[in-house]
Image (tube, rainbow, N blue to C red; front, side, top):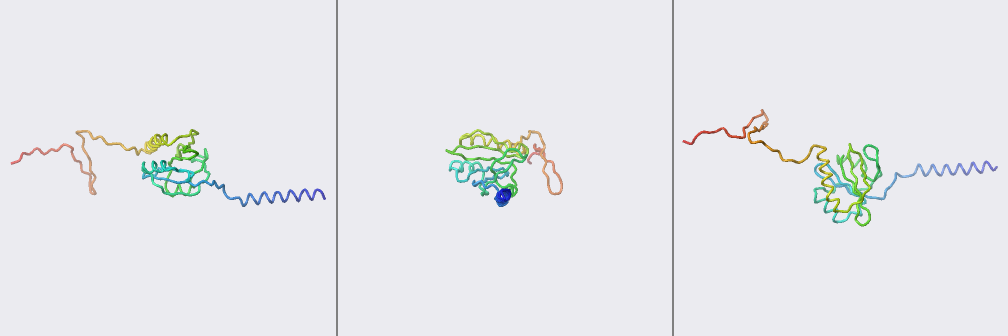
Length: 187
């Protein structure tokens, strides 16, 4: 009789535990994110959305990023299965063709934790806390690293003085000399 009671209690405990495990929703962060994107498909992900302060929003848009998506943040690993933080869902990342982005987590008193996600570098999450001034200084450097890595660095082409330029037409390539060879005199 006593064994039956113990088995009954264990049975109900196991059933209760399993029912909670089966019905458990995926981890719900309670954080909403705001995703910004520029013309190069680089992104800035900011969470929690309700902590974004005016100066940060203005700065992000000032450097050419526009809001493209927002929603519930989910806990994800980086591209190399290292480090873990709240990010946009993977479907949103694929939808916007965004492989390289900066993660900004706004914490109390306008302090910000910064992370970087890159397919080759993985998800980098330094623990140092920054203010907006530090963010303004480092985001352009990070974007330049992204550009350099993709060989998209914006540089001016230097054309030597005696070089020839090639112009491609629909039918054939035409070589045009930089220095004109017309030396005729007016009659």
